[in-house]
Image (cartoon, rainbow, N blue to C red; front, side):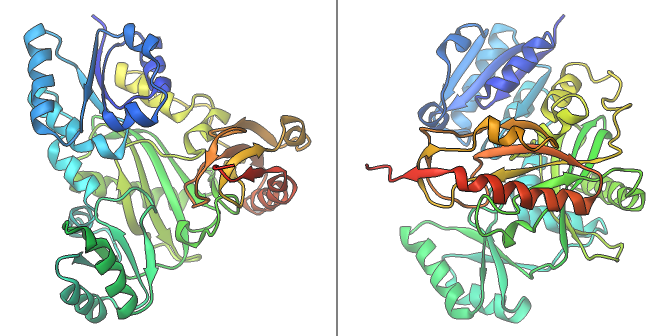
Length: 419
């Protein structure tokens, strides 16, 4: 009997991969996705079940989906969540349908950064200090930040997405304004203020089966995420060869084991971030997401074999399959950068493939957005054009990234979207 998988979020790439592996797939997506994603109705017709709901946070709707599936005798073997915003819904559905993972506790621990860091710190993993903030208690929140964290402080939503909504505040006045402005809608907003962490920033992407990693790769960001000022400059990361970074891999694998135990992660794909000072062994945990990474991270693994998302899907359908990349441990440095316009607007021109092909170290071009698309805001997570490329050393990788940016970013053109 084929594996049954309930997928939370419209993602044609993942749907195709699951079906290519012989899985039977049901799909659940919400009104936001229906309005903003290009949902292919022809693909939907080929699935045994498609549920369109208002919100992944609506327990009543999710309960009705679970009841319908149980009444029809279509109970999934796995529930998978592909986005930040379907984590709680996936945990609730898994509980109702009798699937071991994801759990609601894991959803809380990987969505609410306060719960995450409390649990990880209790497990003996180093984290930066933080305090909880509420927009209904502006004065108390500011006093707490000033006395326990100081300024500057990094302020972020407790359940945010990457660096979106994250900012540095440099004074009590600045924090007061930020909290007051957020609370102007008379809705309670929960945030946290952290003591800034210096050093290099890394991310770890891993696939887990029965509590053990089938894949675990460490990549170093070219520049810490909060230090990136525009989408197309020093915006990427590089996969570190295990043989050259053996000590770091050993330290990170031990820390990751503690993080997983603390947060209840045993299955799936994760994206963890940490900081480390050059020359020091201590790793400082930043945060973890129980989903695959964005940008060009998963595509980087195609230089070794499968896209990391495909490797994960294969483990979902057949957990006993041998670990991928067994013969593909990188002996060179492979990674990605994001190129992008410097001005918001509709993209009217972009680097051509002929221009890119002039650089023989570029392995692949991925275009999340192109000519005719609206590029609304050049923030660090505004993905436009990813180049996957290789180098013989970390220094050469960084040098080649600067070379690509200088040569190709000037090819972008935008025009006002109201033109």
